[in-house]
Image (cartoon, rainbow, N blue to C red; front, side):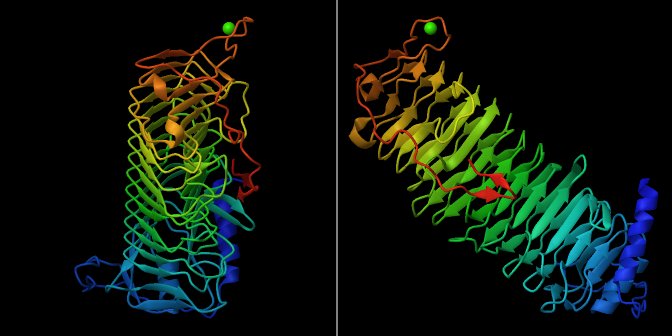
Length: 467
Ligand SMILES: [Ca+2]
């Protein structure tokens, strides 16, 4: 079936789903809508109730603008958007859309390209599934062609009993191109994901506020299933189960965000397919201990050439940074304080390669206040540690090289180092010592009984094990 016939099939299905009694009553506006400055001056349709909204959607031409006047309450139909280039906006400040109790699944179901929702109050409190879904591919009787989905400057109310994420942009096909979620304020549902990008390439989530998740179990944001090249920047987020979860999302940039937790399983969490990911310039603060021994404020695993720079991580995360199965990472200029175990834990949690951490650079980090050690190195070969400030950790243990390390280079205050490295990194039958240089002598033989992670409770996100 080609795309055209698929589209026709959907139109038929959707028409069948809608109430036949809907009469197109929303005429084309002959003049610009006279809204306050916050709303755009031009609209092709101005609607103020469910019937006029649905008829405007049915008769709109590509690239038309539909302005909502007041809070439009939906009592029997999700808004299915199947025309390319439509913009939904406000006619007057504070306008938007909400659901009557038990009436509909989503506020908007976006199936077409280049659709924009802007400057609206999107009140999903009473929907069954969530607020906005956009998809590319086939779901049940529907086929979507969404790409370049835009949510800009909206107030989104997500709290309520929902089956799915509040904003879900997704594909089951080869990847959905482009999404922009910018300048919105979200009131989170503590038990459901707020924003999920599933198979979205080049998705941008910028300058949003996500509040209301503290103490919950959900994820404010997920990038999964091949959401490559995404950007999550300049957001202000209250963390719940995590601060951000990504799986299979290479070249993701998580930068310049503020994260606040009151107790989470994990913080910024990037796993499985994270090559080229970058976590930079974020502040990640918790006021209560995190829950998983192998995870932490910034959890990054399974990456070549990742970058973790200029982050501030504070409070009793189990580990401030929890890094596993990385090669060629740059970990620089981070300031971390107050970990319940390690400021920087290497090979924490499960490792899936024989030598977990190889060829990574740790430079100019400040690590203090860790309860077991500033840095814990295990399953680690040929990493370098240069110019780090490792003072003020428990027992003056700045860095521990355990027996499973070798051929690492350390330059700095050697008195802060415990070196038990005795690992044959290149497999030639001879142990490869770590190379310690700097004032003082490294200690030997201090064994941290708790280095080996305990068994963490298994948590999953969309069926993916968090690890
Ligand atoms: Ca060797």
